[in-house]
Image (tube, rainbow, N blue to C red; front, side, top):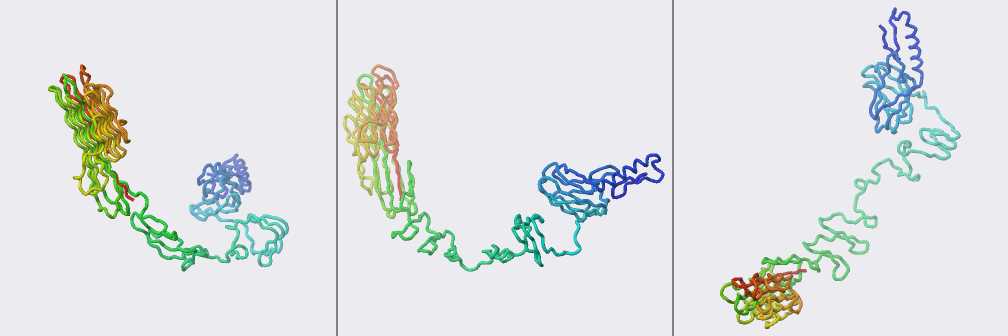
Length: 555
């Protein structure tokens, strides 16, 4: 039986075999021997390690003396090429012509390997030692270094382009110009300071962590400071002098001192805190506050309920007075750490007289007093009177115009906004008066510049339409709209506006009867309920007064 155990994997014919055909096998062997001195190319199929094996008695480029490796794709890292079988001992000249610019590593077994850089050629030999086979570099080397005395002309050596004449006398001196030099891989030694280097081989020549001691002065770009505390700020305390400003206290701000020469910590001079109260609570003095302003609004009164009378005339409920406004400034140091805030409730609307026996409507409730501690008060508006079957209903006074800081709430009275038999009187700081209800007419609530406005009166038997609530000016009307027709409710007032009055029932009609509109927030007075002259139909209820309010500004 033929064997192939040789370094070119030729077919070795057993004695007596291939009678009449041995010439063919011999010719193939001769051709394969010549291939061992030829040029061949093998291609890597993928971006991965690959093995190329010389086949038995078959032509293949792996057998070539000069073997060029290419790749079908770009290589992304160094890849290994294994030459097999690992029993072949042979010489190859390997060219790395792969794509991607990567090195290839030539190996045969677990022994030594040879790297071939991209674009380079290396002569190697394999020792064919089986599993532990090695690949050795077989590039020729001279027995001695020799001496180069002069090289004239232009050329390239290991990537370095030489122009002019190169001479040597112990050390190699390059004359002319030198270009294409890779300072990373093609230059060794120490570059002198005169040539742009450091004159040192130390990699820590200017390491500020280990090679510099002491304090770096300001003139050299330092701070001349060595220690710091959390929160310190560095600033120029004088020309070319840096200093530390330690952390200030809570809620302080950084500002310029009174002389305009330095920075310092101090209290904020702008509004730093606003606390609003629509219900009772506790005000807490903010840290760093110097001044405090407090605004308080009393609760609005409730509108009067309408009267009921089917046999003769009657009036709607009177509009309620609006809550007063009061304001004062304090030094924060004069106030306690906390102050109690009480918000005056809006007065309840008076009930309209129920259908049945003729009768008057109920009066509306008075608005509650709003207070800031025991230092500042704003009284509530007076409730509107209930509608009357014999005469018109009176309206409610607005809250007190008292603008001073009070030490007791007993001094409060219903005094602002003049009560008349027509439209409610206006007010500046106090609440506006409610509109009066007459047998044949209805009137608007009075306005207030600062306090709550009065509510409009309810509609009467002689005038089904109702009065409008007052607004935030010294005029009457302009707030919540009273019902323009019989049987509909008045509109609620907006902020500090009085509620509109409710419409009365028509003289010979059927229900419903209009209710008064609610007073707006910040002490608007409620509107009066409409009169009922419809059999067994209740008169309109008065609108509830708006609750008081408190705002505290600190800075």
